[in-house]
Image (tube, rainbow, N blue to C red; front, side, top):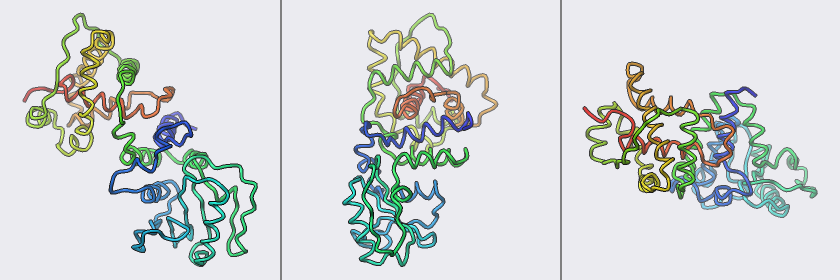
Length: 322
């Protein structure tokens, strides 16, 4: 595995959070946007990983509430999927029996059971009545299988999958809580990987103003409203948590590190002004310098983005004048 692929693969596995110990895993069905359900999510994910370009959500395709036996199907590739968090043998037997009952083997050569989580060690013999081939080792997928397949992909595809997950898993777009320990940890990582400028005086932390950001700061940094709305605006809801943390005297060391990092970022921007047409690109380059591969913290990348976006909102980085 190449050095460049390592952090991407780790980020994907962290964001999927397919671990029996993960809260995100336990509640995965509830993590999608209101206009997106689990079947639609997995259809897009499997298309990205396995190039099933005609994979469809069968309830929507057939305009029914509960398509029998399977959730997704690609008639061109002749493959179908049942998406479930039930891993018992009886559930798999029931799915196979319905697949046979409705003669779905006439459309699809393969039936894949995808377990949200980890599959069991199956000793059961699954009887397909010779209508189609079903191998419990090959045709029951779980998190481990996905990780092995993802590991085979090239870097551009990994980047595409990583972006897809970040855009579609609410747990990672908007964590339920940003705890003091999260903020402290993110500040330390920013200083560790990006660096900091020594400051002699610790100033009071300022609060951002939405009208100023929209009318003055965004134009001064050539940052589009579309970028602000899609990437930054949703993270402002954590501004109170960050402000309270940095204003608490007990966190004075973290406040100093925060200001040192923000000064370093501003120096980086000022020294490279001719390189950038927009502060949007600065965010990308800052994040590119962070190496979180060895940090075993679920959702860390998005929490770092939250902190960086609030640095911008609070006018700690970026131009604050016309």
